[in-house]
Length: 236
Length: 166
Image (cartoon, rainbow over all chains, first blue to last red):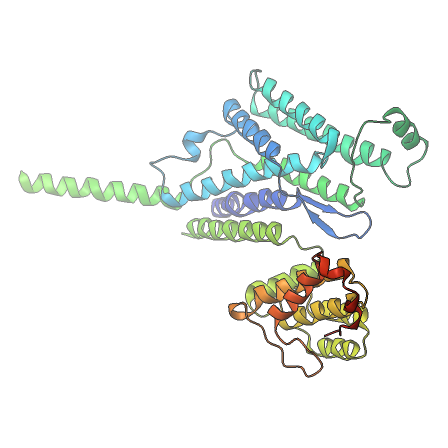
C-alpha cells in the first residue's frame, strides 16, 4: 500500500505538478482573435516577470517554499535539478497567470499592473502564512479575471448595449484600447488560472525525497561504518 | 528505483514540454493546422503540395495571378519553399506591373516573397527553369521589384510606356 502511495506521490510531484505549471505557462498568453478566430500568442510582458519575482519572494517569505529543502547541496543532483525545474516552471506559470488577467495594452494594462504591483508590494510587509497567501492570491486573480474577462470584455464587446455607449461617453477622449478577443479567450484564461491554483495547492513547502535515495544513502552509510569497523579490527 | 525512474522521466518531460512551449511562442502558429505545419518543418519532413503547386502554375500561365497566389499559399502554408515563393513574387510582379505606373503595394508584397525565396534557397541562389518566364533568377526579380518601388526622375520619362513586362 505504501509503495503505491510513494509512487503516486512521486508522479504527482515530478510529473503532474510541472505539467500543470507549464500548461499555465502555455495557456496564460493564448488569446483567440475575435474576428479571424486565430490563435494569438502574447509573450509575458516585462511587468509580469517583475510581478512574478515579487510573488516568488512572497512564497519564500511565508514559507510556502522552503528553499533550504528545495535546493540543497547535500541532496542528490537529480533531486536538485528536478526541484529547480519545478521552481522555474512556477516562476513562468506565475508570470503567465498575471499575463492572462492583464489587459493587453493601453491605460487599463498599466492600471491593472499598478494594482498588482501595489498589492504584492504591500503583502511583502504583511503577516502571512501560506494558507492565507493562497486565499489572498485566489481572490486577487479571481477579481482581475472578472474585471478583465467579464466586465471590460462585456463593456467593449462589438455587440455591447447601453452600458457600452454609457462607458464610451463617460470615457470620451481617454484612449482605452481594448483588443477584441473571442469568448473562448475567457475560458482559456479560466482554465489556466484554475490549473495555476491547483499547482499552488500541490506544491509542498518541503519537497519529499524519493525513498530510494534515502535507502541508498543509508546503505552507503552502513557500508562506510562496516568498512571502518573492519579496519579498526585489523588495527587492533 | 521506480521513484528514481519517475524523477528522471519528470525531468525529461519538463524539459521537453518547456521546449515545446518556447517553440510555440517563437513560431506563433495561428491555428492547429499551422502547429502541424510548423512541426513538420521542425522535423524536416515538410514538403510542398505538388498538385496544388501545378494548379497554381496553370492559373499563373492564364494570367490569373491572384487565384494562383491563393493556390500556392495553400500549397506552401509554411512559406518555406523557395520555388513557390519565387512564383508568388513573380505573380505579384506581373499583376502589379503597369505600362504607366506600378502598383507599389503589390510590388512590396512581391519583394517580401522573393526575399523569403532567397533566404530559403541553398546559398541564397535560386534559378527557375521556366520558358514562360523572362526572369529566371530570384536576384533578377528582386532587382526589378526594388526598381519598381523606387522613385526617380526616370519615372517621368514618357518613353516608359513602350517598355515590356517581363
